Length: 250
Image 1 (cartoon, rainbow, N blue to C red):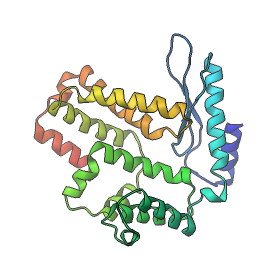
Image 2: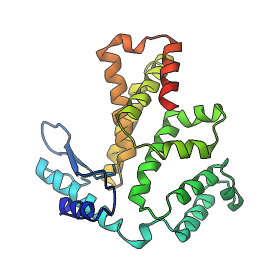
Image 3: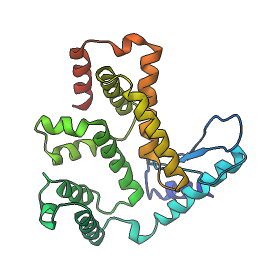
Image 4: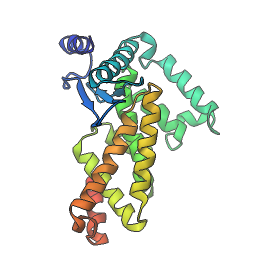
């Protein structure tokens, strides 16, 4: 049913016209409980939240969660409209120390959020989620702070990254950042990975969208793999690392 749903959307070109497949991933396990993830066109990811005694059961449960969210995403209330933006900004103001006046100032967090929503007018929340995941990762990775220190405005950063999808190249650059962090603070990679795995499991069991947590795990695992498979990869000069990272983000 999930496959047919997205194939139908592809045929109508209603969403993610350049993306085509629903991808399943089962975690290696010697026995139950089994864990399965499903990634939808556009990148949204869901997993089984029940305790499953077979891989097939885990896959079906993950598909069920993804299908419910896919159908829910079709509701008018899940599309970004002026009314939706107004409500979202008000909720953001209520949960922070900001004010409604900040919504018109892109240099503030509220203003940047307002700008991102307006830039994605008409899109569904699953479509918007891919962009939000990129900025969540950039914030977690420390890249947004680094970009602010180069005097880039929030609008410039949003406009730049809105053109890109989360791909292997971006993951590789983020993994490189974590290799640099590991050199400065040995053990931080393993600590972050344990935290990411715990967050991923908690979010999966709660039936939440998982891409942010799963991408964190993938990026940290990639960094650790590069360090242990090629020790020299973690020991280039600071100038070389800084130059590579800078080229990746500009």
